Image (tube, rainbow, N blue to C red; front, side, top):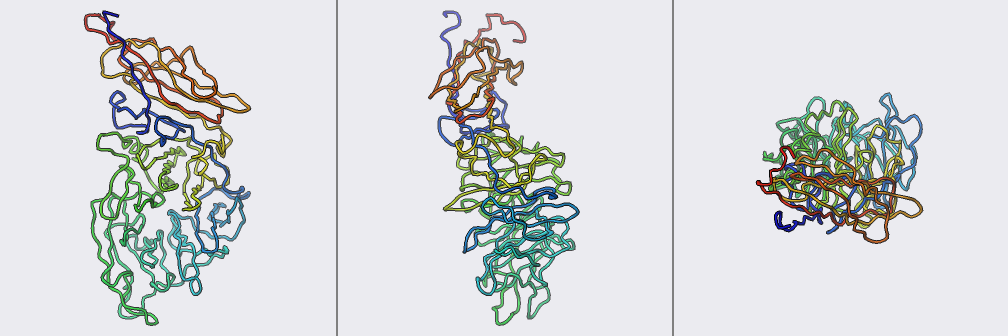
Length: 527
């Protein structure tokens, strides 16, 4: 004791920074971790296991080759959920999946590469509808889907387009095969009318510099996303749209103004979503939000406490033409789902708690190629699974935030969380680690569940071994479990992983003690 001094305690009791990839493990600050999977981080002082996912619809039938789209439509006469299934040979089928159903409605033959736009039109002359664009072969006009499931072309005057957005009561369409950089604006009185009357031919359109990869409206501006940039389009003094002339006495409007911004572009329109008055979107370099004039990254932090390195590794070879997908959706304004699916079939699923911008991983099987959000007062989020092993049903993801709803995901696998912490101690010097302690709660009614503990040594975490005290079993309340470290090293990594389903899994903290070595001790080289 006199030679080595009093043992130094090290504790990890907060995980609200999520997992961090932009710093070496020994530099990750308190509150961060090397990896967090299937835990949620929003409650101070503990990690807790997420809930499972449940089926959001009945299976959508045999002969349907995959799920490609989902949309929630807030019609005035009641909520309605629509989904599009791929039946092969280019046939896309529209389903009503409201209330766990899966009723076939019509062939729609559109495969969107964006979250379909809800058009709030006049309820008598122009009923509200869902605008569904074709994402891959924009040689056909968009479709409109009414509340009763009726499907028809948007109009004879509508352009072929891949992307859509409502702005100032006007429907904007963008990116055709012939004009990938063009935006068309509808008549403000009739969102299906794209044939300008009056003084100028093609007066209801505007051309941007680059091919458009998505549209969004915010704070009176229209954002035109490109692969590497964003244009901010503003109306003139008469307001939207870019409509010159008159139709049946409609007022004459002028041309909008295009402003070049310093914002990065968007690689997939399925990543564009709204929350708290902001627009979120994904680029190869990270996930960003904007108020229309500037953007901020939530994956790259000022103190390097982010996951930009990890994100870039997922998206560096993104190619939508090969089937790569980056999709995002927001639940209850606070939770952002982000899915990256590679054309090889590899899927990575992230959840970010927006108030702290903390990221965690989840099982890849809950990753979705498109999300649909229901707003207040009945918050909910749904998704179309894009995992190669996905069953042919849409899923409800709201249960992720209530661990008591389900212990299993839609694929029948139980939710089994994992935590990897780092460097329980400080600095690069050699240390002698003794016992560790895990403070946890683990419960399973009518079954069994266990937690495993592994300890690795070194700055990078290697030579992982199961501790002799593991596996540890369920308890009532909170338990402090001792486990053996007994290693001479400059740092340790501790992995806590679950085997089997549980009703509750919570980690409140991990403790250990170490003695620093002195140079005169002559510790063996390489330890």
